[in-house]
Image (tube, rainbow over all chains, first blue to last red; front, side, top):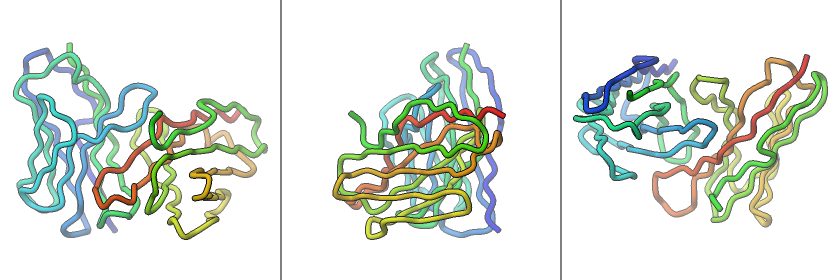
Length: 112
Length: 112
């Protein structure tokens, strides 16, 4: 069966520090991978998606970046965090466009 | 207003009652999905209904889709305290892109 792992679960980082959130998927190949951010009490905002290794599409211009170094690995990064980067970050995958998503358990990021 | 808006924003019912949540959207869609999110956790996929379907069931869940009114409803029958969560609808627009539009969610509280 397919599983998705996302870590860490919580993170408190100072302003200006770097960020690396990792997500891996098991039990499938060539998944479509996504990073979403959720503000408190709100819906999900798409940040990045990837349909293949090295292929990254950005939906929101900001100081975050994403990379897909392996087929089932998706990384969200920042060189210098801002206070506004605080939020709940969710990794997700689906096999093809039009399928439902499987979400990771999320990372609560607090920038102080 | 945003595509994928849930109504009501919050709903409080007694255990054993039925809960109905509605979702409206603006553009033509390929499919509409419903998700549940427990506090501080990732989203869990409940049901996906395609644009050529009108009704779908899964256990105590019933989803309807009316493409002429651009609306969907999620019915949870015989609710339980464990159904307490936020429920989100999401749509894949019929535009060929990879962006799924999520609503802000309905917060359901089921009192034991």
